[in-house]
Length: 278
DNA sequence: CACACAACCTGTCAGC
DNA sequence: TGCTGACAGGTTGTGT
Image 1 (tube, rainbow, N blue to C red):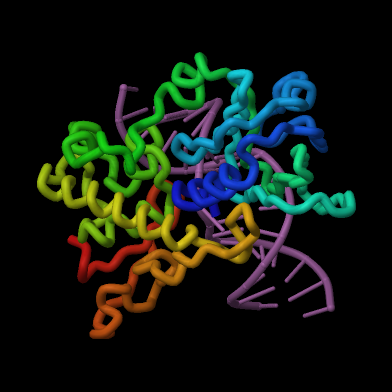
Image 2: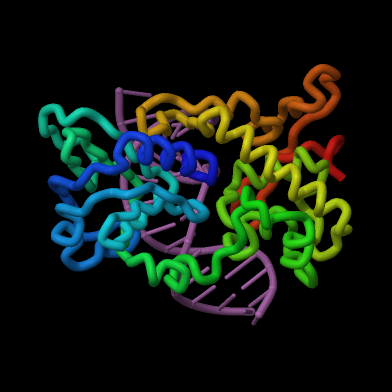
């Protein structure tokens, strides 16, 4: 599930339903996810009043009145679901359950445990290990083709690989890297540093439009729900190339005259249309 | 420093 | 039906 649009969709759901409430209980069912939980994790959260829910890249940030921040990453298979209390049944892989004062309960479920939770403070967030090398937010005002072109300068890795590098640009993963390159008409094999500034400008616009469209559709759902409310996202129906190996791409659909290729780049599947992407 | 790849862990699906 | 291998939305450590 979780690239920027899915994380943003979850963030919004958490923010709307939980802001202003305080944490009444925390159940921590393991000592680690991808990394160990911080010491005194439960003690440091109980009683904290949630002010707002933010996001940086693919990380969800729960900001508390005290200045404390709960950092959550969903990894590959992480889900955050809000529900009304209910009976206390332990479902498989529900590693953390956080109860709020008005009776709502936020559950973190993550079968593969590639996600993480950590704690920090407002004055330490920008220098935090997880964020101090992170690239720009693609949906910020300040992000544009010039910024991306500067990050690409001199780099010989493929443009696809660099789009997935969180120190180049924050929040893109395999799906949205592929879809952004498709919208920009760029071959994913191209050396990033060899692409003209003009084309990189188009790419930056494509990234923003793909992400915006996906957020408006509630993200992409694969074989499970994504939104904090438990509803499905719908962007997977708008994929032009991702997961479409052997099928016509979205752009050629009406002409039926292309076939989406699936290749491996640094161990990850890349989907692209050789007819539309040069 | 830049880059490619293996490893982390579980679930699912195609093929035999 | 059951087994095996490949693959899946991400990140990090290691080796070249």
